[in-house]
Length: 184
Image (cartoon, rainbow, N blue to C red):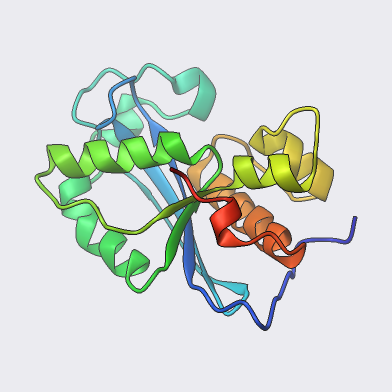
């Protein structure tokens, strides 16, 4: 496989934002970190990462993402961060995530809890794209990254979002269309 670090697709017409949420519990409004990578003109042009104070102080998934309440309690809540998130997603044709149903659920849950309209931007799923494009035994983010030689610090929202953006660009370079990855 060719290296994926500097994937550039000059004819890629869409703007997409790859995103990855980490959550503090099983409720959809429990985002505690968000990473995003903006894709324009076939290349990654910007990234954003922030911790988010979740609505409840119990953090159940520290063993997965390494985040604790003491790390999160002084962070802004989702509603306070929304203007930055919304500006980063502005003009995007697609939101892209690996296992997009999870990230879409969290985005909707956080927006609902903050009384914010959820962006009307279609989600694309790189798990679906990976199943179509690579035919790997497993299509978890770490498996696809290993297959493509993409560096990954798994379950760190910034690293996961950047890896997802690189997978998306690789799939597009292979000829997969956005509709082939669209989350229903």
